[in-house]
Image (cartoon, rainbow, N blue to C red):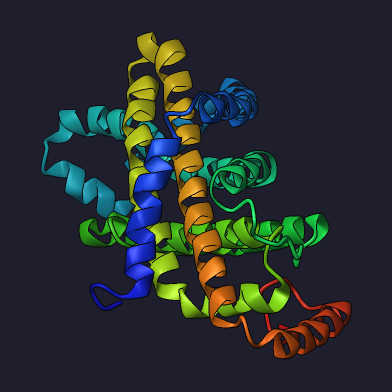
Length: 302
């Protein structure tokens, strides 16, 4: 993406707008909804499964051959202590992608429509709503895309043990998931199917970059979360704080994509101001394709 390109200008403009919107009381209140959902889900899982998961992971860490060799460098007496310390962190690393995907789905389904309406009222009140993606299609798209991401997370987990790759692979997968879900949701109300596909194709690299950056921003709550898991005295206080930070960072990501996608849609319509007939014909073709069973955002059956 060349410096100074339309995509990069839109990306930076949308970034600062999204950051400013996060301080609005309405966004703060909306962030409490996924917080409540995530607390119930994570609290239930931790209550029933945390101790067992940590014990199982500690057993694996102590019995895997090459890990025992590494631990032997610390001395025989230190191996068990190191395994007991690292086990909660490994469980945390494994559960974080699942929790993040759940949070993304909650925000996509519950928060994003309200945030789209808020941004529309403030910036794009005159932007026509063509409703190219229905609720059922949005949900199906989010679930199928999330399933692909979860499989990718699981398959690539061995690479996470390699220090450089752990800083690259998960954010790239997360970035892909974020951009695929949030872009479609941001455009669902306003863009036609052809407009949506055109924008996702034209701005795929800026959108992927936005997703990856959002993934790195989402790492910060994991530090707070890890502190709560390891230092159980602060569990009750730190975990809700971490979950709320997740919610507000995801709200920021959603706002970033909304500002970017709606501004890009507005520009696209200005460019095609004299091409209404052609767009209408393409929309009719897209409707026929969707009736044939295509997934949102695709151009041919998988």
